[in-house]
Amino acid sequence: MKISEWPADERPREKLIEHGASALSDAELVAIFLRTGMAGRTAVDVARELLSLCGGLRALLALDRLQFRQIPGLGPAKYAQLHAALEIGRRFLRAELEHRTVIDNPDCTRRFLIAQLHGKEHESFACLFLDTRHRVIRFEELHQGTIDHAHVYPRVIVKRALGCNAAALILAHNHPSGVTQPSAADRELTLRLKDILKIVDIRILDHFIVGDGQSFSFAEHGLL
Image (cartoon, rainbow, N blue to C red):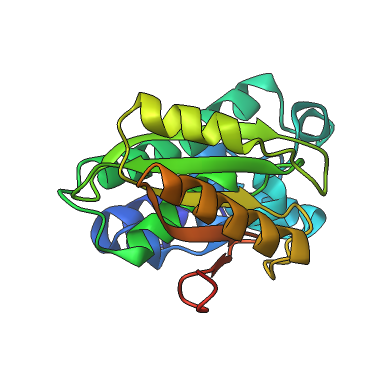
């Protein structure tokens, strides 16, 4: 049976319009993105097969261009549409964060950093630069490295912070392994940066480690 023949409250688009996107399953969301099915299969059927084949929504979204195009029915146009949608989401979160009067909501910051850093194949180190009232000045990815290590140069962080007249920082980096527990090197680096930045009167408010859709906060665990 075609989706157009389904009851109106079961069709993904109508369901989204009536109840909001959060009411849809992963398969229904992917079906809206796909728009059409294949011979004998609805878009929802195809979406379910894709999610099963890839191992879930996160794995589907993390496919690189070549992996994506190897899946029957998907091509460069779909790849472009999907990554445009992902980037819209990232920019929405960035705009939401940057337009807050003050960074006073850890959950908002956490969502933003997860959106920016999760799913990367290599470790990346980033900073949120804040003014004296803890308003966002800018977000920058400063260092990229291997799958399990990013070379972080404190002098670069200090130079960037002074250059934008930051009064405080929130550090963040990802663990491609998905494990968010800080390593001994993570702890040592954080304390070293804290001591160096204190000399120029800049505070580190937190350090987030982003893993598989989750994050670890140094501040919340009393490590700052």
